[in-house]
Length: 233
Image (spheres, helix red, strand yellow):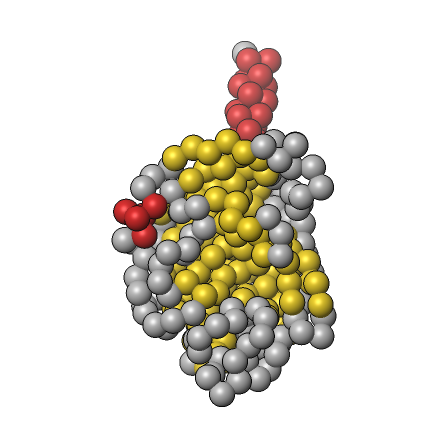
């Protein structure tokens, strides 16, 4: 009887360990913006500021941008992670967040790499765009797989126009990115917008920096808040 009890206890412990193991695969979410100032971030302070608990990127007609520029998270690189934030963009402009990216030109805060796109027209919001790289990797409504040679296979995850209807114009939207291994998933307002599975030799990135974008073009305003990062092990 004692042997049976020990066996049951051992089996129960093993079962609980198996159940708990997925939870141990990630850390708890952490705020990477303090809501007060740009501590921990670097960029052109003529373009980036903090107001009412939001990071604000703003351009004007008097000083048009000649190139895309970024606000870079200064606390290190990310690899496998979940990132969630709220954003609001004005009537015009284009933005996004870079991840697993690299700094191309430090003085001008120019960045290249994977981008979860944001735009006022809602044409590109949710797509995966490789800044200063391969361009559009997946449109909204697509899951695209890149093999080692760079050949791509496209699958549908929904109608791009219909998915766009859940994105609110000139209002707050919730963005979630999951980068885990070779799979890169973009979600807006709890809807999967695009997904890339990237195995291309010499192109796929396993780690890099995070950075928010201001795009060259018409005057624009973009706001970010509630920025939370969860690292996946």
